[in-house]
Image (cartoon, rainbow, N blue to C red; front, side):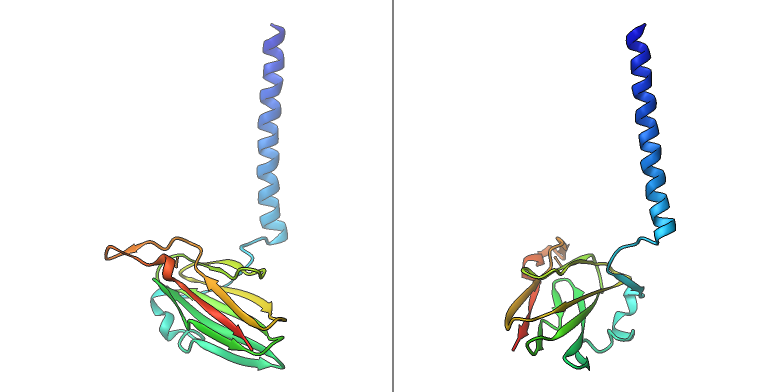
Length: 160
Ligand code: CUA
């Protein structure tokens, strides 16, 4: 009899905690407006090439040593594959996918994001040190026509 009573209380406590956590998640979404950190806009993934700024991918100076890098991800390449900026440049990468989910990882920086078809991802980074920064797709972006090319999907930022 005693054991059953304790068991029941543990069950109640478990359910109460689950409800509390669920309410906390809902409250954080509703009250704090929490969403994916890098998702800034929606786009029709079938019209990437006609939708600004993706109709003209590349690097654009936006201010004093600040740049926008507009990039399209697709199986299995980034367009463009090379970004050139001067030392100290603050670069905002504006990226979308034309087909499947890709990734955006630049080792030794704080940049690590998902590139999702239909969404625009933005990440900003200041390149204080000159050098070459490889960017790689770190989401397995699969098969097409029995070809595998995820491992060859990379490019680089050259900081001069
Ligand atoms: Cu794109 Cu892996």
